[in-house]
Length: 365
Image 1 (cartoon, one colour):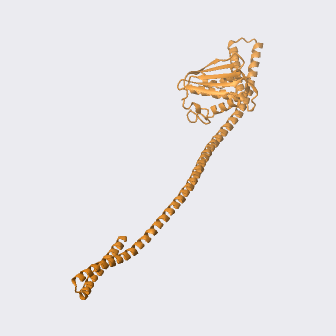
Image 2: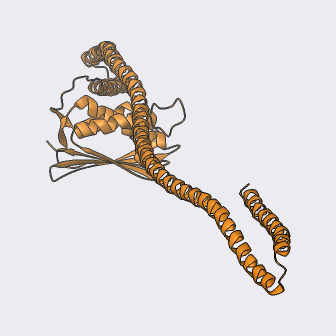
Image 3: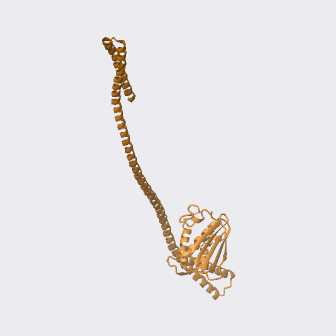
């Protein structure tokens, strides 16, 4: 469009120049020839006439060009002005956009921070929910174990009654034989066997009674050797003819302050785990030491062992390496908590398919 305007203006200038030029030549020459006949004078007039034509056409061209150039300068000025205004507007807009971007960044950072908080809270809620479920399951198991303790105490009491009848009966039989001077070796052997059986059952009942004690006191005098022996009697059916027990007891008194029933549960759990780790025949070694006012009990079995990568997890609630239905995964967790409450330590070392060693350290009385 701008090119078309320029071309039109040029055409007008050329057209005007041609019209004036042709009109000037035609009419001026006729006029001069009509009035002047002298050749020299005519030449002089023609010369001045040419100067006049140049001056006239130059003036007219100047006027037209000035007008056009003035318009162009005005347009250029307006363009420059608009350019400056546009630059200022762009700069202002850029500043506004930068400010808006900074605000958006602040809002985005706040949102990211809030999202991080929400994600953290969601994680905590999930962990809390998981812990609540575990706690619920633990409470159910603890409730079952408490019921089992009550049941065990009741069974032990019920066993004691017929046991006393048997003991009373065999005592009377023994006195009767003595009075009648009965020297039948078979009778004596039967009476001795009954005494042995009664003593064994009495020891098992005593162990069950000790294990099922429900008081929370941690100030009872606990003889570790007696507790281990009671537990060995209780688990004897798991060990008989299959597992050999090797004892290396300290000659010193191995006594701690604690809860007799809870410590029975600790050693019962460890001995059962050790016996279950031995698939066929094997050995469980029990060693006790007293050193620097500390009682150390070590239980070593030559069973299947535990993988190193899961060894740190074996005291976690509900963690078990046993087949489904054969364990709750609470035994060692409860054992760990009991030892902690007695201000002791519990540690495990193991080599897969070779052995597992459990070391308990408790403050000596």
